[in-house]
Length: 252
Image (tube, rainbow, N blue to C red; front, side, top):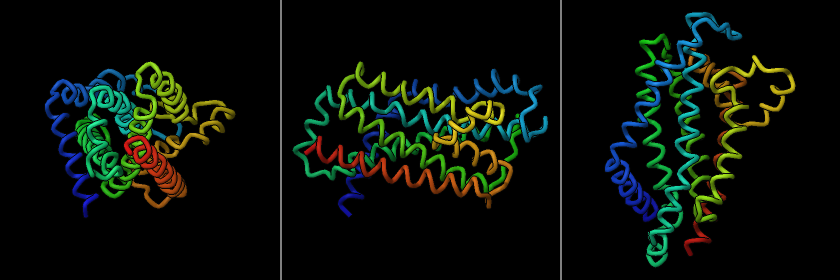
């Protein structure tokens, strides 16, 4: 019960910080509109494998939702570094607050932010031709939450370990670029040569994107969806366990 209460208190504190930053809120909600207005039209004449001209948005939107979940969590380490530098973490050392709650409250805030953005994105994508299938969309939301929890836990723990923007930036970019390019987020990996498709199977986010495209057309009971659920659930559990140990050790 104490851990739940501590998690809630940290979540409320971080949520208030977000609401006090209107520029972040506006930018987060504007990005999806820009992608739909400036990028989606480029796909209208592109023949993607397994799609028809009318279903192109069902291939594009799930990738963008995964991008949002991935990016929303990956860069939170910079916020953690700011708290370390300003003495927030040092003050928390002398409190009885659960160390797991210090992580969970932050991740919960990031997850709420992500869900608001992706649902806003989905709503404005419907007039552009995206077909919403409720059952598949709910499973997709679960996968997006797993992606966010994984990247947010990783980013927060990394910020706590490195404590410096110049040290964390190369690592974040090293993780970010290959994952984005090998996930098929913007364009399906079926367009890539065979060797690149094989490499993509080593990328956990690839499974979220591929499953998302199936779920967006209402295909829930599928081997790829099952693979995505199993792989991302396992990866999330491992990452959260590691991040919790980092918080317990560094905020002793």
